[in-house]
Image (cartoon, rainbow, N blue to C red; front, side):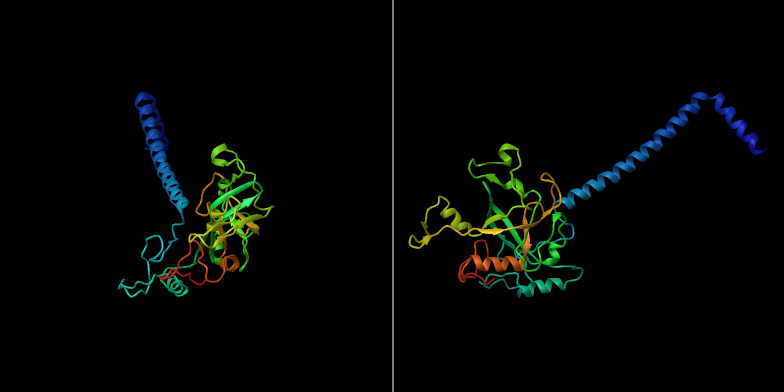
Length: 280
């Protein structure tokens, strides 16, 4: 039997049993569509899950703290005895050891300090400035501006940092009014207060006394600084760089040397077992 004869016979059979033909075609369409929908749904859910995990932080980044920070106990080459009364810190030598570990592509120290920032009538307290290496800065996705140069105290502002500012006259900010504070990071300078202890002790504008009741505490000095860039994203977007302010670690070290006298404990920074400050 020739091929055209087979085609004609098949068509005649389909015409003769129309209901079965329609049901068969409908079953094939539903089955194919179901497979396509399930595969698409699986791929979409997998991508959404990965994006959600990535938004919490980089999947290839590990934050390591010393045994004296945040209650953690992560050390390299500490001897393993755990009997020493000396605090343990992540020093430059420890960072070098991390960089030599297999599969480690980069290591950056982090020097973090909380500050008060002001611009006009707006103020933000407990903003975290993080001094990091240039290799770390280069990973920050910028939406505007540039990264600070080595040794420069230029600031890269997280894209949600603006929400933390409030009107110091009314005490109301974004979370009270739903309106974004009128703060311009890129075109206006910011006044930064590093000594938060002195700030809160003298915030009424008067000179108070220290904890020993003898040494007078003067209002802290305000330093005028500029932002060099802003992390990409709008004020309602979120990524692992959204909430903090970043700068070059050497620039931050130089700035802290100006703010705090030699031998003074820097708030939020580690001390030795005698309570004396570590050298920056």
